[in-house]
Image (tube, rainbow, N blue to C red):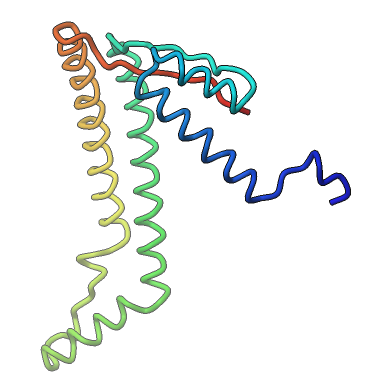
Amino acid sequence: MSDEGSKQTLGERINSAIAAASVEMKASANPESKEHAAAAAEVHGRTPRRARLRLTRIDPWSVMKTSFLLAVAFGIVTVVAVAVVWSVLGVAGVWDSINTTVGGVMGGSGDGFDVNNYLGTTRVLGFTMLISVIDTVLITAVATLTAFLYNMAAALLGGIEVTLAEDQN
């Protein structure tokens, strides 16, 4: 470090960040306090802008569209994950091992047993797709219903109040 006067050490930067976080926490607890605003200005050189907002309504249509797209994405991820797991189990020889074990347990009568007849890849993927479609419908309906319920509760109680602050950097 050639210019040590203008650069802070790691410890000084950590202490400065902790002091700024402390001032921010105190200011968030009581945003009307003038002394906290002055302390924040002293630490950072200026007072961060704040906005106190109240979330009083959520548009059910936008919630429905968003939840539908997220549920479809979740369904696709689920189907792909099941396909990968089933393929890995097949390559690892798990199904052949199960067939051998069942054949050994049943004596000679287990020769016709094949676990793929019961847990084949196509059957499992079909079941997974069915569950994904049902989940998509349910997730979309529950999210939309939740938006309607929030709007009713916010009409009675006023909604959720959020304080937004400008980033220090």
